[in-house]
Length: 403
Ligand code: HEM
Image (cartoon, rainbow, N blue to C red; front, side, top):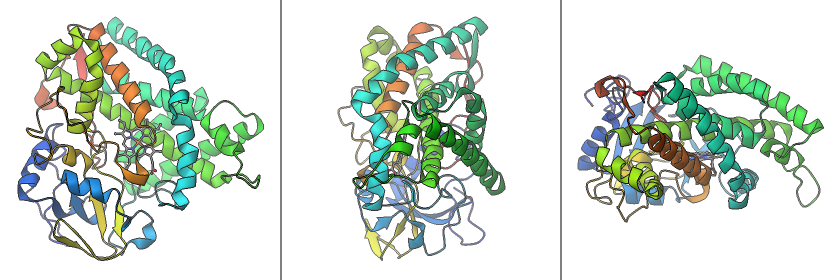
């Protein structure tokens, strides 16, 4: 917390220290909670922002219509070019209701409970294959060999991405969080080109997948609900939103359990408790650290702090989950905690469309991993673990284990 932004003079909250270990963000949040619920800072590559960390404040800000997503409300402070800030205008993440509602319905169609259950056997199939490979090798990197493989496979299945494009799309999706602006621009163009090819294939030969559903959905007047551009933009967005978030959740959840032998012993004795454990991990270690940028449509106040019209507000969801005013001893992973009102999936109109799929993947991945390998342990010293340099998703860079 020592550095100051050379341009605006604000304290830099998310600095080298923040990315130095998977535990560092929580130490920062604990220190910030002692100072207040709203902070002013500059974020690397994003310009000046307001950071809201209090649980009550984040909860109501997620539902506050005066905090809008369309970039036209920005006063220009906001310069971010990374995902999702640079996402195309006119899609689910850059619109608010009422325009947003139409897109939201189109995405949610895939994640209704009756549609979700069909992914359960596939999740088990992918998990078992990866665990077999890790068993054969005597260990592996739980990020690349496990946590990343499951969600990229499932989200590609959901969308209907043919096998030949999956490796490329995963590589590009990885780059969207950590690459510089130029790499990002290039990667987004390449992803859009591939998604457009898939859109053309699915136009000719529809399948039982989300891209086909989007292409062929009609409104009440019989007109297409989405145009070609919107189908492509939504496909890119859903791939990224469904992949890295869940991968980060599985790997951080695995580390949490490697750190907590007593909790792990209880879970192994009664695997049904994994559901409660994942909920508690979402509170304490949610993978999406802040919501997408929001702009004040008018001068307003949050917990007594004045936010000017057009200024950028980032709602820190994981910090809110670690707010001691709401969750006593927030850094303790307590699977019996009765208060489960975390905001790891956001809230209000932009609440995560894939929350139930993400829960299903994370629960199965962690339960099968820890019940299959009773001797699983870290292959490197804890102090050597690092996170990648993404303020939105500072996921573990790697998690080497022996089994
Ligand atoms: C543990 C995993 C996940 C976490 C922590 C997570 C978290 C979030 C959060 C916090 C938001 C809202 C951001 C904001 O309001 O600023 C969001 C939105 C979204 N998520 Fe997730 N997500 C996860 C998995 C998924 C999956 C698996 C999918 C789909 C396959 C998905 C699709 C979406 C979409 C489409 C949105 C945009 C919704 C909107 O703007 O209306 N997410 N997610």
